[in-house]
Image (cartoon, rainbow, N blue to C red; front, side, top):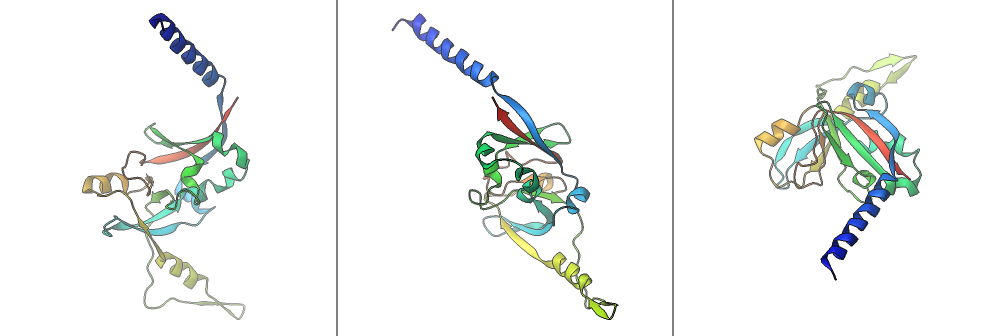
Length: 200
């Protein structure tokens, strides 16, 4: 085949691909503010103890599971449209990370990504006062303190967590992808998740 013909075919394919790509547009379907105070009004946080694969503790942090954060927004999306959904996680410095619904599907990803925030963890002392309201004992305080002591263990797949990685990512506003074997998708100072759909 003549080399000019080969280049012509390649050029034609590139043009067709470009036309198909431009025929699609990203439509914003939802936006979620990652401010912890706002999230706490809607979902429950979890106390998570992070570990390396070698079972070395990295530390205990209060976190939100991302699948719980996006649950309400995803309930408005048709299941058949998931293949055309993309999530963009925005950081306060203007950087961003992309993800797909599969990253937050428990049937596909057994270790759910989490958002860390720095609310202090509560502890239970020797005694907890129980109030009597209308002749009945109110155990709300006991339940609240007990929840603060309940911990989940999350074993990361990344082989080694250096002090640099720990200092950079294990802090307020970071989103950790536990299934990843590197930190390339982890993002710090996350402030917003936008949900887009590819539409033709």
